[in-house]
Image 1 (cartoon, helix red, strand yellow):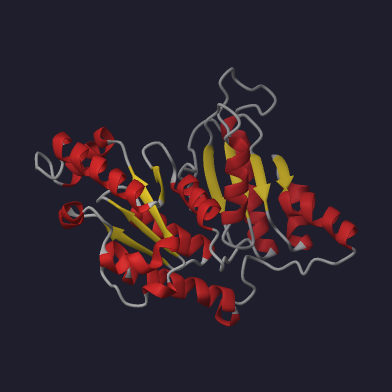
Image 2 (cartoon, one colour; image 1 turned 45 degrees about the horizontal axis):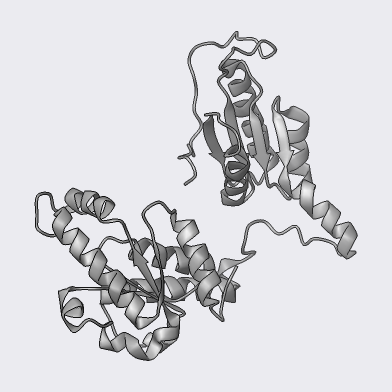
Length: 298
């Protein structure tokens, strides 16, 4: 997962006279994500690149830089970091307003990586089309069908969390099954928030193990079902954080539930994976590859 970022300006009270041209063997380094929108795109893309390097840096997100005054303020903050750290900050930007971008380009004493400029301009030439230079993912959220579909998907997933409701299951794009604390809820919400998919999830409980089959309400929707499992040792750790020293969290019970759930999913012929070492993003990607939901929103 991406490292936590600071969204508020930070000020270091020492080292103001440090030299930018004389980096230490293990240099301090600040990374800025500058955007005229939320900054999520800049941060996601920047973190994916930084993950290739064994280095730690101070992360600062500067969102909503949509005026020249804010751009000048951002420049002052970036340049202050250069002095304090004694190293050039790395600046990822997704600014689309060229006048605002110019303020950053001309003023900041950092390594500037203009991600939109890097990709949008070559695409304009290749496609022979002019970019609309839209700020953010939605130009007007109140008028965006995609945005409203995404909100509807989130509400649907919340209403169908942990088997709360059997209603409208036919509207589900994805139905996740698995024992308690195997990662169903966060994966459902990620699929709804990131892809606009209506994701339901059902816990497998002792009654299901007694019947040795999936909950009856799910059987008509088998093509939409994906199973999640987890190593018993990891499951016991997670459950002990919630209910320490309980039968629910005991390693014996966790081994039993995992074994029964995996056997049930094999018998039912549904696809499943272990979430033990996987991120939510990896789990969601695997689900999309396996189920190929008809309706995807990006």
